[in-house]
Length: 211
Image (cartoon, rainbow, N blue to C red; front, top):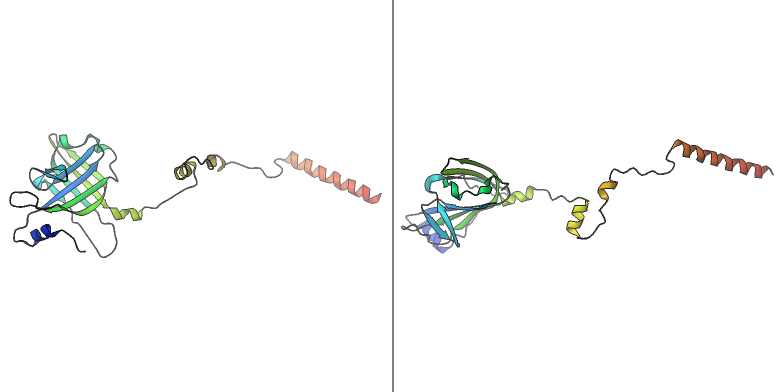
């Protein structure tokens, strides 16, 4: 599909010397990781992005003519352990993951704002901590994966008050789900009494009929 890279980035793509650079954003619970495939720190978008150089690996970014969720895997190595959030072990599944493509000049400065080539959410995460440095591998799912998730709503008290705060119409729905409700005679004695009462009524009618 066509990409609107902007005038400056498009000119860089068409020039004789191309210096691409990728920016990865991973929104971990304990703090976001911002890294790029260059060297040193780069300030962009009001944030500092740490260079990891050749210690980064990104799987192919796939596209197709059909509407499908195609993910990718981001691997970052040589990251200082101090930059790794303590909450990395927490559940980061479903949090934001983004990948941007930019271009630099001969001095290593960005020529224009990078273009977002992938937007999705983190799925599976693995980490290898080697002491001073560590590496992480993150499998990311495209945002289109949301179309695969079912939107389920149930008749429960929690669902009802989430939609209509203060509505207690389903407050006892869980209790009555398995509750036994008796309809008519509940035991043999009651049934016998009912049968005896009916027999007595029939006898009285017969007596009156003969009289």
